[in-house]
Image 1 (tube, rainbow, N blue to C red):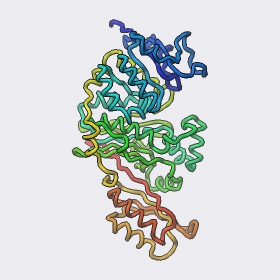
Image 2: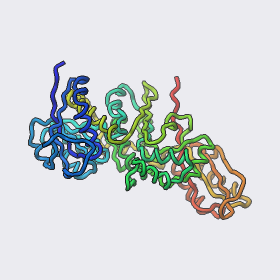
Image 3: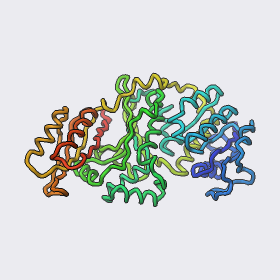
Image 4: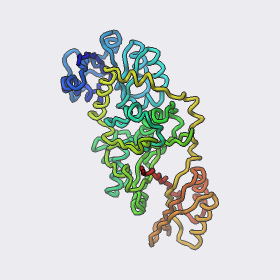
Length: 439
């Protein structure tokens, strides 16, 4: 095999950038032997040249001058690991204009500006590779772009944020409230000091926009994905769910029926025997259903320095060997404008629901809440109530429903919150029945 030598530049020398540099410096020989590609780290660009990093660079490699990369025709690939959607967007455009292929792990940028950048890449006859943008070291992007192309993807269900999964796993296993579990996640390094983008579901939605576009062959507008986070999840609801055979997860859901596509991110109860229910801690998993292959499950570490760096270096090899260029050239997505009319409104999505109400301990309560649900076309499939009286002489009543539209449940919850036999706002969590793969 004839060896190919490729010079690359790293822009952004933070956590993941440090991991990429470490792999290229320490594993370069092994990568060359396995792939026939010698990847040479030619430059590392960062605005802070003094901050200590966990990897030592050879002298002269670190610079704050991006033009050094842009003007060097021998550098073929730019690795953008800055993050965010402002400076990173400008950097990717400049790399493409300078004739460099781009490798990135920037999920927010691709979710919000992907179509624009893809057009720029094709205009420059270059490609953008982005395996590290979704689920860290889990090779889901390559699977959707290549391994599963013989399939019409019917659905996918993903646990795509390790911070949320760690928090919910601790709330479930240790009976901890949300804030206690969050502090533990921050202490362990699984949550940022400001964890907003993780716990409000935004990070998961960015990843769903990218994965959904590849799975369903259309440019998914990020702002069209309904998103709910996990901050409002109460430990008592997790406990009641366990009693009824359910485990709670923050799910990214994409489903296709005929020409209609539904996408959403929200906490959901799934049956404890479902493979995704057994994904705990900071791990990610994506269950993809194809019409030919059936159910496939992708599992692994979804974030962190080395798992994401592994995906980035994998992309470098794919670009260097020409595989990424061919995949990028054949990637055909329906435009955002055409996609919007295919997306199902959240109000029309059908689901089962878990509802907990704090019912006042007096006659007629069952008839009242049952009547309100029935009025809105909602049928009760199960109920749970323990003896004993709680605060304000209330009793927790847990109800599960048969499938109904979200719009029906929203209207019923509004009416329930106004009735004088209920104290406070009802708690409501969707129940997602992930299909079984059967012959």
